[in-house]
Length: 151
Image 1 (spheres, one colour):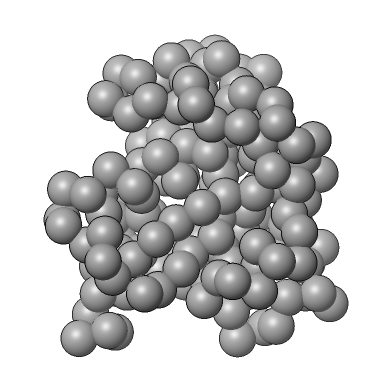
Image 2 (cartoon, one colour):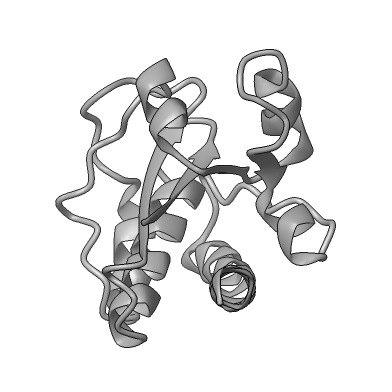
């Protein structure tokens, strides 16, 4: 089983939305036995709910983030993961002396779209929707890439 860990700052917006979107795509494509995802934050407080706007935007897409609770990135999380995918180059830089470079990438870098996933924190629902759209595109590409490489 391939294990992917999505990482952002607080694990309330981007990485939690990425996890939710990826889980839905994995389920839709019937890949639960081949791929699993989780999320954490480099500066997260453990146990905080996802941002209200993130919950709302994901609900519009049929994804329930109400049960999500933030997790501070711990060694055990990245050690268990085959891939640690950050939302920005800054997150990657923060982890480069901790996580082995052969498993550490930005999400965009891994799929060949080299921009950061912008932080919607404090933004309008429209800003969160734009972030979710960006994440959905990147995650669709990610899953395609991972399943091609595994084949």
